[in-house]
Every structure is written in structure tokens, then in C-alpha cells.
Length: 630
Ligand SMILES: Cc1ncc(C[n+]2csc(CCOP(=O)(O)OP(=O)(O)O)c2C)c(N)n1
Ligand SMILES: CC(=O)[C@@H](O)[C@H](O)COP(=O)(O)O
Ligand SMILES: [Mg+2]
Image (cartoon, rainbow, N blue to C red; front, side, top):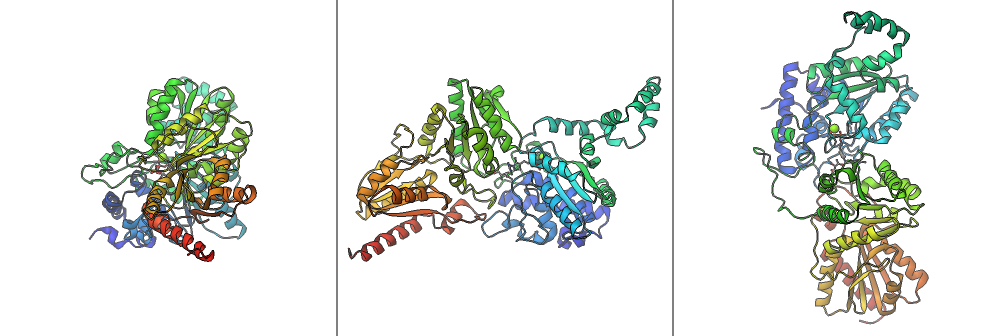
């Protein structure tokens, strides 16, 4: 029986001795590793915060005190300590527990997260509300060094410094985002971590200077004249002090005694406190310590060796995108690539190695990435900004105000469009068609397969204006019937042209729709099959033509129904065509879609081949019956 068996809630750890806490940290790591080696998940970040989470729950009284986890991918230990250790095996799975904090899941999850850099703002909101209500509790935001590169974190720090009550920001600094952290701030934090002098310096500046032979007295005299500037040199965390925080640290984030002492001190201060904790990403598991990025978000793996279980090395959409832009960059030296802290996920790793001077990782700063690209485009370059669909939501105004209003030739490579699966609500890329397809000047395309993605990127590079090209997570689809029709703006790709029933597939839905098409053909129905390709502008000429010869047009998209492609078609047909063609849009409901595998979610939301076929058949039969045709 391990000590973890005795821990079912945070109150159970408050009575433990130092030795027992250390044993508990060991048991938690073992439990985490054993479970995640089967389920997969965000391993490295969680291994790095075992002691930090233990110390937080030891010192504070959750859920009265509020622990707000930035991104929340590192909240697994918090989940283990708050009654969910058995459920950990269901993490990120359909109907299981979420990989992020969820208020509906547990009272200790006080604020939902998933996207980065929100925790300080949210915590400050809690703190202000507490003060207004005259309540007495502690509010703690726990943010990583990667997430601190997000602008929102600074907006919140700037706002928080004036608070006159207790508010704690814990910086979990492991020098890593998913990949190595980037930028000036990271260097600044690094300087605080690497100078042991700073770490130990707590005393009187003058006492210290006196110890320096000869130089000391002179320096003191100068210093007396300029107390602030010497503070600048010698007080660690001056940046945070200047923002109005009391800076504590750096603290060894794997030393429970130091952590507990620091949190106890921080609790006593009636003001904003910034605690700088240094941790090692992947701590306690050699393969993850050696390669934290690989185990940041991992599939299942063999515990002994750290070998990630076979994914058959399947080529993904991100891989194809990454290869193609290297090829395009070889031909066009104006092409540059930008990522917001996702070089691996977006497939830009090889580009970064081949063209280091034309590659920019700007940190977790999607808004900045877009406007940065706009500046480059305005200077004659061809920037490609590769951002996941859900993270691009952040940069809505920058897309409109900085890029599209000026009709600048920025290419938005939107990865993870559509359902992404296990990350759940915060990460599903199901809003991009709706939030992009009404923006003037922006062309929006959604390729159906590998060849189409390649052609789409060629089109985007040659187009003189902003283009958004969206493609999904996972294995690339190669369509045997791919005809590779050349790209013309606003023209769909007609794969088979008949009469009566038209199926128009948007992007990745083509794979399933193609199967539906074949089943309908087996029933000797007359079916037209179209790859929409352009979401904006839509192919009005084709749609007009289809309404003349088809009783039904069915559209398919992995996007919420409102503001989607199907509604655009419906609107156009109502407004611009004279026939009575029935348009039925297959899309996702206007809701937040939980976690699960992509296949499970497609079943759940009726997007699998059989359900679609059934619905289409029913619709055809009912309509014909209404018309007295059967
Ligand atoms: C807005 C946004 N952009 C990108 C991401 C993807 N992302 C998740 S975790 C992460 C790295 C976070 O680094 P850090 O905060 O230092 O935490 P660590 O993983 O090092 O523990 C990134 C880039 C995200 N969740 N949200
Ligand atoms: C926590 C987070 O936002 C990322 O780690 C995300 O889970 C990455 O998703 P992919 O695994 O699809 O790259
Ligand atoms: Mg980090």
C-alpha cells in the first residue's frame, strides 16, 4: 500500500511529515507514469509540478483558496490530490475526466482553462471580487514561463500591481514552452535562475558592498545617490517589483521545505506577491527529462524505455504543409514562416532548420504573430502564419484590422481545424469558418486531401491578398479519385457530375462524404459530388447550376452550423436562385464539444458515414412521399 492510497482529498496531506510528503511525491510520479503510459497525455509538465502542487495544497485551503492553473495541462497532480486519482485512467477520453481544469468536474477546479496566459487575469478578477465581498481567502495563479510570454499575462500583471490585498502569482519556470522557451523575457528569467548570487541575496545592499575590498566604499557612495539603480542591478525580480509585486525567489521547485516556507511567507503579505519557482520539465522520468518536448503531450508509451507506441509514422496534414512550404521557400525568398510557440505541432520544425533566418517563433503570442506578419507583408515579404484554429480565435481583430483591412498578402495556415479530439472544448477547431468567412478581402479555402492541400498552398502563395487555408489534425487523406483541378479563385472542384442529389463536402469531411456518395450510387441514385474548396468566395455559378438540376443539395462541414458554409449556400440559394432545391446542412451543433477520440465524437454528433447516409435517405424518402412521388 503506497502513501497515495491514504490521500483522497487535500486535507489528508496537511497532516503529513516532510518525509511522508516526499514519499507521496514519489508515489504520485509512479501513479502518473503508470497511468499516462497507457492513456497518453501531458506528461512532462505534470512530472515537473509534483512538489509544487503538493506544497500548494499543503499550504492553502482549496477550494476556499482558489488555485487557478494557466493552460491547465499541468493540473493532473491537482486532480490526483482532489479525489480523482482513480479517474486519472479516464483522462482526456470520451466521458472521462478532462485534461484541463473543469468547474463542472470538481469543486477544486475553480476556473476553466485550456488556452494560455489567462490565469492572472482570472485570478485578479477573483481577488477583486473577494475584496468587494469582504471575504478572506487566498487567490493563486500558477503560470508557466511559456504562458508568461502571452501578452494577456502582462496586461494582468500591469493591472494587478495596485492591489492592496493578498494575491499570489506562482511562476513555474522550467525554461520550456512546448519546445525551448523563446524571447527576451525568457533570457531575463534565465539570468535570475543562473546567478546563484541573486538566489541567496536577501540582505542589506550596503553590508554586501562593504565586503568588496577597496571598491566597496566608493560604490556605496555612488549607490546612495542612486538607490533605485543599484536595486535594479542587485534585487532579483526587479521587473516584477516595479510592476508592484513583491518578488520571492527563485525557489527550487522540487524542494518541498523551501516551497512550503515560501508559500507560508507569501500568505502573510497583504499585497501582490510574485513567486518565482524553478522546476525541471519531465522531472523524475529520464526519457522525459531528456526530451521534454516529446513527452509534452504524448501518446501511450512503453514505461521502461520511453518508446512511444507505434503511430505507424503516418504522414499528417502538418507534415505535408511543412514539406510544401520548404519547397515553396526554396523558390521564393520572400516567404517567411511564423509560429506562436508551436514549431513541432504545426510542422514547421524542418523549415526552422533549413531557413533559420526566415523562421520566427514569437512565443505564445498569436495576436502579435498576426500583426508581426502584417508588418512583414507590408514590407514586401510573404509571411505564412501557422496557428491552430482554436488559438487563432485570439487574433480576430488583428486579422481584420491589421491584415485584411489593408489587403495584405498574409497566409494563415490554420492547423487543427475541425474536431481535434482529446483536448476537448477549448481546442476543437469548429468556429473558424464562421469567424473568418465574413471578413472582407480574406479568401478562405479548405482542401479535401493531400494533393488539394499542396495545390491550395501554391494558390495562396501566388494570390495577392490574405488567404486562410484550413486543414485538420491527424493523418492525411489521399483521395484516389483526386483530379487535381487547377485552382481558380472561388471555384469548387466537381468530382462527379450527375443530377438530382448533390453532395458538397468542405475540407476533411470529403473522406466520409465520398463513402456516402458510393453508397448512394450503389442504390442507383443520380449523385453529384463536389469538393467545395473555397468557403469564401463560394462558387455561386456552380451552386446556381446545381439548383437547376438537383432536388437536393447536401453540404457537410466540421464547423458549427451558425455562420458555416452550408448557411452561406442556403442564403445564396434563397436570394439568388429561382428553383425549389432543398438545401440541408450537415454541420456541428452550436455548442462546445467535449473530449473523446475524433471517431467517437463523429459518432456522437452524427457525422459518421452510416448516420449521414441514414439521414440523407430519410430526407429523400420523406420529401418524395410529401410530393406523392413514392
Ligand atoms: C493561446 C494558446 N496558444 C498555444 C497553446 C499551446 N500550448 C499549450 S501548453 C504550451 C506551452 C506552455 O508552456 P508553459 O506555460 O511554460 O508550461 P510548461 O508546459 O512548460 O509546463 C503551449 C504553447 C495554448 N494552450 N494556448
Ligand atoms: C495543452 C495544449 O494546448 C497543447 O499541448 C495541445 O494539447 C497540443 O495539441 P496537439 O497534440 O494537437 O499538438
Ligand atoms: Mg514552461
